[in-house]
Amino acid sequence: MNKIGELREIIKQSNNIVFFGGAGVSTESNIPDFRSAKGLYNAKSEYGYSPEDMLSINFFLKHTAIFYDYYRKNILHTDAEPNDAHLALAKLERIGKLKAVITQNIDGLHQKAGSKEVLELHGTVSRHFCMNCKSSYSWMDVENAEGVPICNICSGTIRPDIVLYGEALDNDVIGKSVDYIEKADTLIIGGTSLVVYPAAGLITYFKGKNLILINREGTPYDGKANLVINESIGKVLKKALEEL
Ligand code: CNA
Image (cartoon, rainbow, N blue to C red; front, top):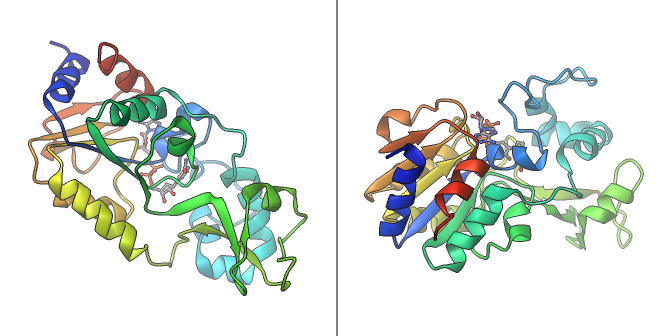
């Protein structure tokens, strides 16, 4: 049996699957990841700062206008559509096998594909809020504003509801993620280099039977997995779910 066939069999026998994913899940929707050859970390920067610097809370507070220029050009992808990986995961939830998607992504594409239980470890670009009065703003408000978006109620600075480098993750989201992972019989990890902490550390709570890794490149956890598939996650998940 080939690896996709093996994955299909594992899925058939599992009833409590959790998916843990990252930026590689959305590259087939034309959203660049960070660490692939075509990722943002390897792209030539017009700013003279690394993406990691620009996506930090200190940078946001100090250079808010540059942050927003970078953010609008590289991070906000308001016209992106879900790909085969997002659609397959939504289907897996619909048929009752998948209990939650835990994602490091901030693009909102799992929800757009129809997934209901989505835990966003790093927040989402689909929400923005005023740092002063906490009024909410959509991504369209931010995309259409010139320069730094300002609250029209109190003139405070608007920020994206994402976790910037140097900020803590939401305890409630972490708690729920740990709970889902601890109860899962199968954990499918995909499209993530597994080097960003504390998010990557959550997978150590898994005590179930099948640990599956689907990623184009190797990860530090390959040795712990029952099945490693180094291919496109959209292609793999679509094929694995064909007869389900
Ligand atoms: P990463 O470190 O860029 O790793 C992505 C991994 O996915 C790499 O190992 C690739 O080999 C692999 N990969 C890329 N495309 C595919 C594909 N089609 N099929 C299979 N594997 C693929 O990204 P991580 O998610 O591990 O790092 C966490 C960061 C990235 C989080 O803080 C995110 O917020 C951040 N990020 C998110 C997005 C998004 O929301 N779409 C985009 C870019 C970065």
